[in-house]
Length: 86
Picture 1 (tube, rainbow, N blue to C red):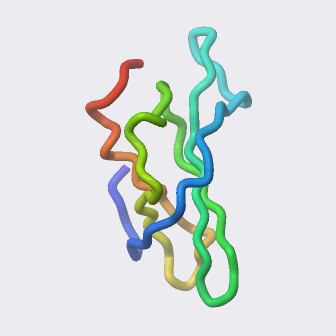
Picture 2: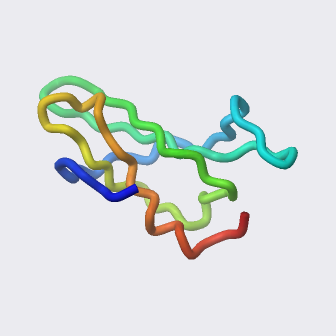
Picture 3: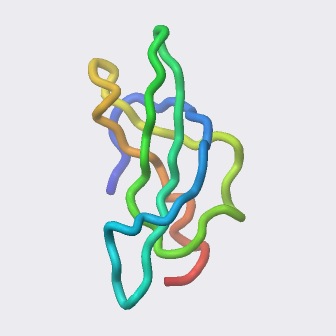
């Protein structure tokens, strides 16, 4: 997915398994992130990742948001494209 919106940096909160989706007997991972803006805390969840991204993460991750509605967002995981294995 191409990135869109206004880029912000969010704190990586955790990497977790998304047990609501299964493919070939495996569950994917997602990255949960959080940031505060204007006195409000926003939580973001990435698209699914088919390997554990933990070794490739730093403390912050880029998120693209709609400046009028932070509930419309895209967590940028494109840097993982050449990492891990499926």
